Image (cartoon, rainbow, N blue to C red; front, side, top):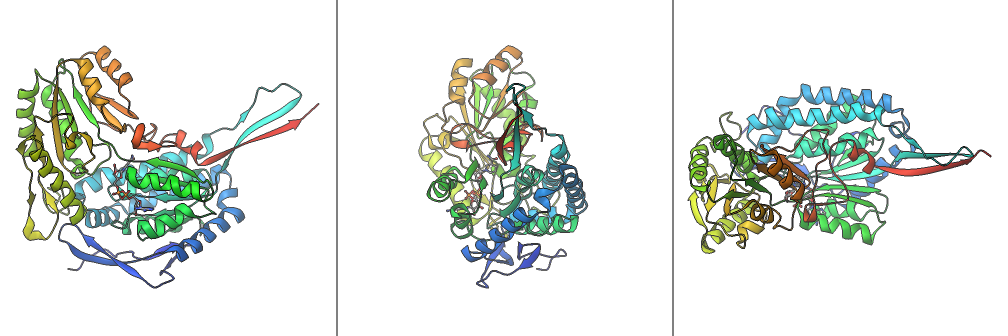
Length: 488
Ligand code: NAD
């Protein structure tokens, strides 16, 4: 098959497109047909050393790290505008590599990517340092300085959006960065870096090293000359970065990890058809390959029967198909092994006694792709595996409760704590629940993740060390320095 767009396949180091030192490559597949899309440069430790050296040199010498914030702002705004101008091309790369529906890529992922870069660019020259209240005999300044060389380790489910969530505050604060895309989705990240160079971001400031986690990811995590790792991915891998840091130079580690998020429907919830829209969207959007998907539907027993009917009506709207077809709302899962993992969870749920009320199978097998039907289980108990583990697929578990207190207790019955949604006609009930649920973002009467101005991250096993988005994300890519000047 031939494609109209060009596939960027090389690493970006010091502003240049380069091969790996070893000359090795790896194949990236189209999950919609299982066929090879392109051969991508396979970086290893030797390439990590070269890229860290380039990023360190760019940081130490400047000009990026030494520019005024206002100058950096202008270049980052140009970067956002260029990304916007290349939205169609980037959207197609995402759809091809990640299997994401093209309509979502165009309407959600690209606008979010652009707005994230733009929002943090605009914040660049609007964040102030401080003077401490230490009396008139001293001038005591508390200043924020860029932390240095940052490695940003990315997942495959929202490749560009997660890159932009990291890049915004990292670049705005004058750091240099090495992006490590997930091995399934390298190309949109490489293209993003090319556009950064075109926008005037100096060589060495934004580098991209495609390759495998065990090779590139690990070498970045263990590197003695990297100051900070910003990671998004599974909790299991996140833990490794804490170990890498402990065993190397105590680099700062910020983790955004998985979730097993609840959507709680209280007995007084109004407009159940709207609630059902949100519930379906929150589990089937992005094929359920979404850290903030509400994979546990906790509903008051009095509403369950009616709600299940409404939910099943909505499943028909979630058309599974080729991600390049504008009508598709679900594409394939990212790869065969992940599809098999999701199907195994479905089998296990059946064996543990949950009632399958829709979906449950691989479909479109003739395509060679990894498509799974939107799947709903009723009569799920909180002890079952599908109530506990992050499945990362279009699989919903319905659990009933008898009182608001029990609903909140069930919402908190998880080792994660990323997001939650609560539906109630009473502000008091909703607010009390929002305060009691242990999660980084609680949306009320909607399924939402907030916007660029709100922090995103989790309690418990959902994260560590900080948050993505908002002005708070800027501080975590800075060191604090006290300058104490005796004026007496
Ligand atoms: P993953 O943990 O498998 O991979 C994430 C990144 O880590 C990839 O770049 C991978 O190459 C790298 N990696 C893998 N093994 C490594 C190792 N041994 N050493 C160093 N690096 C290694 O996660 P994934 O499957 O790409 O993404 C899905 C996960 O991401 C889900 O758990 C999801 O909930 C989470 N996620 C969280 C957020 C959030 O904001 N909290 C957002 C998106 C995804």
